[in-house]
Image 1 (cartoon, one colour):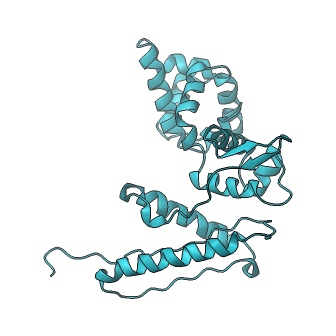
Image 2: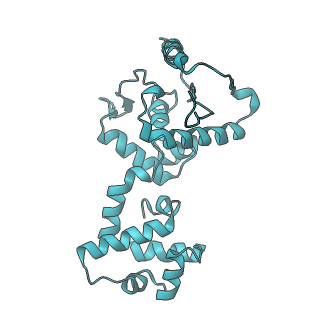
Image 3: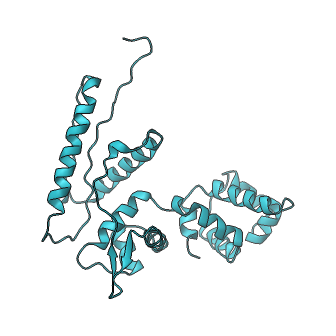
Amino acid sequence: MEGLSDVLDLDIREFLQNLILLKQKRNPRFSQRAFAHQLGFSPSSLNEIIKGKRGLSKKSREKLKAGLAGDKDFEQYLLEHRKDLIEMWHLRVFLELVGTEGFHEDLKWISRRLGVTEDQAAIMLDELLRDRKVQRNSAGKLVAVASRAFSPLAEVAPESEQKTQDEIAKLSQVVKEVPSQDCFFGTVVVAIDPKDFEYIRAKMVDVMKEHQSFLNRDGVKRQEVYQLSFGCVPLTKKVSGEA
């Protein structure tokens, strides 16, 4: 079932609880016991899974897959939470991958190139087509049409800070898996006057624009997708009462 493997990568307790609530919203008489029967679990087993007292074995996953097959509420849940099933930063990578030489519109090939599941690749392709960031040309080939204009992380809203930190953590994990000769990663920790932050940000934006312009120059053979990271994050906090 498309999307199920991705849901199981999320917090299974939250997923099952939300799906039960969705069903109860449609039918107030729907019970957790009825849901357990639908999935092929005993009521006590499902309750232990929801409470985190029991994990999901391979057999349990197969039960979920069979029990949710054709479930309209599950399909609605996927539709409403589809963007939670993938990392949004993968969409940017996918968009760049479309423009590389030798790109194949094959979910298995795409999933291997991006390090995601085929379900995730399918969702990303659907999202990009839905948002008209990619389209098919006269020959039926998939091409990127979205503007690749510069978009600095400095414009990220404050409420997205945790998401940004999560992406940085994921990048760090990727770096560990890449041969050292194929990547460069460095940081500088330095004390500054907070008043200089705007100057630093402006300079970083200039450098990022310069890099993007150079890397997008005509005649370049684009073969791999890299992430260039620039940032300036405070590591200390002002103590209340200090000047």
